[in-house]
Length: 112
Image (cartoon, rainbow, N blue to C red; front, side):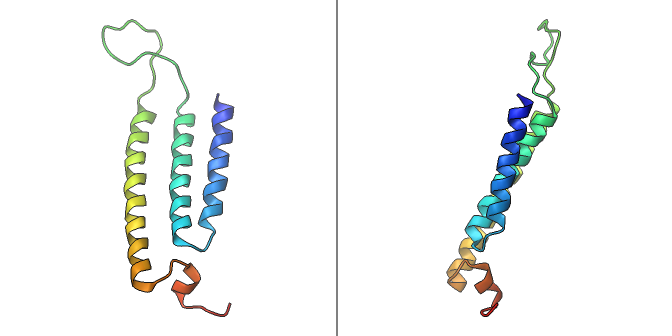
C-alpha cells in the first residue's frame, strides 16, 4: 500500500510542479494546492498506514493507530485551504485591476 501511495505522491508532485511553472496565475494557484495535497499524502504515508483500533480506554485492541499524523493532516488541510482561498482572492483582484492574469504581462516585460 505504501508503494501505491508513494507513486500517487510522485504523480501529484509532478502535476503540481508542471502547473506552478506555467504563466497564468490560476494554474499556479492550482499547482500550489495540488502540491499541498501531495505533501499531505506524503505525511500520512510516512506516518505509516497502520490498521488498529482507536486509542480509547476500555477497548481491548493490541495495536493502536497513531493519531499524530492524522492531527498534522487536519491542520495542514485547513492551512492549505485558507492559503488557496487567499491566493484566489488576490488573483481575482489583480485580474480585475490589471486586466490580465499572465505573469509576464504583470511584470511589464513585453519583448523577452
